[in-house]
Image (cartoon, rainbow, N blue to C red):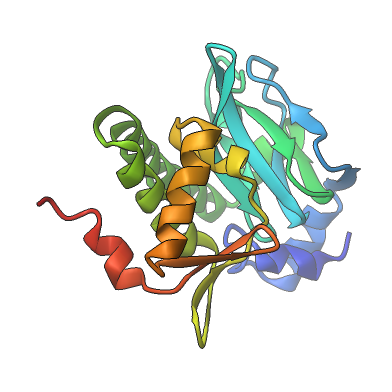
Length: 227
């Protein structure tokens, strides 16, 4: 693969061209169709995955329904947790939401790499801690807050992670179905549909071609304030 593609990833942005060229020789490129599984929960964790293009969801199956934990797109990476754990098993599954291209760095190459370039490991640990904090927030959302608050929080989180500012507000630059949002918030799809319609009627959001724009982010944040 082109070594300069690696510079788009925070893990490698500080490395020089020589290091990038070395790492690129260790990587393989794999193309996935929409809805294709990358790995399943319990599979052996044998690689770090870098998203070159497309969108990938990380999820767990909970009593016959999926709970989406994270969504990754171009410039993101995942799979690092299994590589750093002794048991080496994935704690969740990965599946594409859109047609995707991934760069795969196998464990047998990854471990010597981080030993020789510890700054990469530091970047992974920083990201891992941030993701753990996000997981704790998600658990709180799913266990304490009502559906309206959970969906509002998720929209704000998506705007922070995938938002693109424009004249009418902030566009969440992902095509998400109501089922995706239900799986991200532990909510029935029918409830998501009802609440999104309410948010639209209140002029908080706008939905066009499965993409959500937040029109009034301050008012959406106000929904989270205790009354």
